[in-house]
Length: 251
Image (cartoon, rainbow, N blue to C red; front, side, top):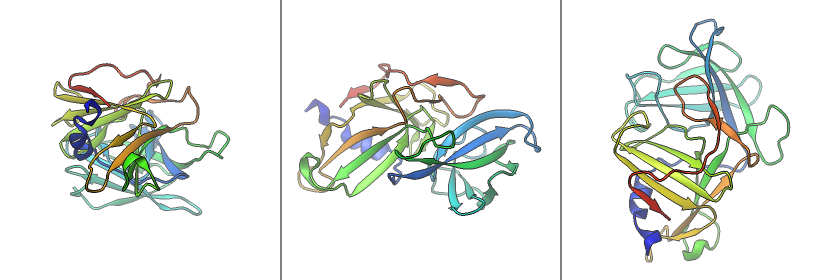
């Protein structure tokens, strides 16, 4: 029973993203100048992920979507006044390897990295992600009919009532989701925290779909590191065990 408490809120609060087993992530290096000489920070982003805009107060969120997969890669950049529904300005298409105007007063150089269990070498993506799989049957039986993906390096993501971040403990046992209510920058005092057991099947609705779901984690190895929070100079930290936060509920 305790595991069922708060599941409805957890589902409604999440901004979900469709996943694939092998995919391309976007490597972004930000610069403070238009010639891309003075680097500010680096980040590895999910294709089509809805990120909180930490670089300007004019918009709430931004996303990058890969639109060119052969030859020179291209990326559509969108900015939004909400959780990636209402565009603030027309999309702009950026080209890999060029110094492009990004968001706020920053410029960026972009390139794609393959995330795959078969990828080896320095060009591969090391982005750690959690996948949330929904099933039409109880006990997580059969094939999932929806699969969604979130990064777990504590990136600040946008959702409908504020921002949220995900992280995983070093033993890949638990995924922690922290929702920052009515906050644009993943801070503040109004927090809801959930701890989900990796691989555990959570029962949901008895008489309608989805009837069950579970979380899994995909990462390069147990020592995967990533940027702790978008929006500042690069600080690379090991993935830490989730702390107990206000509103903590364990599932």
